[in-house]
Image (cartoon, rainbow over all chains, first blue to last red; front, side):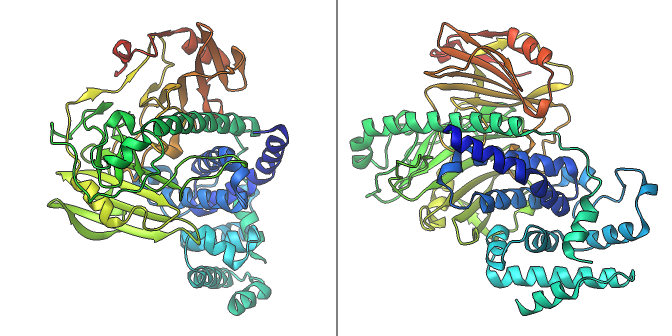
Amino acid sequence: MKADEERAFREFVAAQLVPLRNLAYVTCGDWHTAEDAVATALAKLYPRWRRLDRPDLYVKTMVYRAAIDETRRPWRRERAAGDAMPDVPLHDPASVSDEHLHVRAALREVPPRQRAALVLRYYLGLSQEETATVLGCSLGTAKSQVSRGLGRLRDLLAAEQIELSDAEVCGSARA
Amino acid sequence: MHVHEVVDVMTEDGPPVRVSVDDIVASGRREQRRRRTGFAAAGLAMVAVAGVAVATAVSVPAAQRTGTATAPAANPPAVTRAAAGPLLADPFEFTFSAYSVGPVHVQDPIVASNAYQIASVLVDGTDSRIVGRHESLTGPSLSARLTVYRPGAYAAQKLGGANSTVAGHRALKSERQIGHGPSQKTLAWEYAPNAWAVLESIAEQADLPTMQQLEATAGGLTGAAARPAKAPFTLSYIPAGYQLFAVGEQTTGSLDGFGGTSDTEHSGVLFAKKGLPKKGLLGPYDNMMWGAFQIMVSEDPKPAEPGCIANLCSRLEDGKVTVEVASNAGSLSPAEMRKVLDGIKLTDVRDKGSWADIRP
């Protein structure tokens, strides 16, 4: 890899590392697994860097697939609690507000694939088509995943008197 | 509240990122070097045997079948080697050999772990090389491999494929399109009670290979005389808490079996912390590399400067053979990496008869 290409790769990694780790974590529910998935995907991206038109989609696909696979692996469940997000807070629970605890509990109740779809669409800002590419499904299925995830999250938050943005709910319905 | 705020709440108290940009670049370089040298060597081998390959598509010697396969097959599928022994293997053992069924060429296995052995798979009319901007592929891209799991290791029930039969054995098969991209096929069959073998392909062109070709290839798998996976070195020091994890012959890097062998990447051996599962797997240990350390023995026309930088310690022997100890995500301290490196004693990398059985 030429120096300017490696510089661009480094900038890409520096910018993507945390958002990708968040995508993986929200999908699989384990920080260590999430970081493993991201680090492995980015290392595999390196030799492919020059020939990919959309390295961002490539690496998101790799990370998503690794994270969703982890939710299916029985030995990971020992620490990842399977499809659910971990119930045990990593830091002092006293520092977390009740609302945040309710929000986390609500997101834990959304199925992993729908969680990933929501992150891709509304956190990482992908289009419906790009979301479908990363999820490895048809456009219709991707829309369905986003819509169902959004609906589930809205209902769960509503039960805790937390309102999800109308703009996103309506946007999903239109898509 | 917006969805992105929900995600922020969920991720706001995550632990500090352990891996650095330097770690990822170092690991990426190792992956690139493994693939480039592997494919380059394979390309040269194929130039030498291209005429033979076209004329004898159903009976190609295993030694000549490394790397890309660009010649279309003219003959109907036929199994080219007879049964030579059972497939069931002990840890870090190879129990099958290269064979061809029509246009599909299973290579000699090159990776062995405590739970499986892996061989690359090539298909005529495809090209598996990673090429630069000024090069072009000679056919549709393909990544394919055969993984033979030890009893109980593979979680077939998690595959979710359609029921089928391969040579009288229970089988599962699945096909799907990855977004708008490549076609992914998986064929798993129970070659012995509770022991599964899995053919996987990720192909740019959906019918290269077809599921029927994979099924015919699966039917051709037979055992060969068992042999241990070996390395061109012995070692006197393994850090506490680590154990042998996977052995790669003529390959280094992620040891996932894709891409074939290399003439210059002699050996890649992974060690990981004890307690890794040997059952319930859905694939090789790929994503669990992080946190492990790897010993690599290779020859590079432009070897790295001996010494320790970042997470890599290396030395040069006879002015041409590079011995490296790579610690992923800082799993080993520089002092530990140096101690492992100093405890490595090379055999003759070019003479496989001198290679050592490093099984615990």
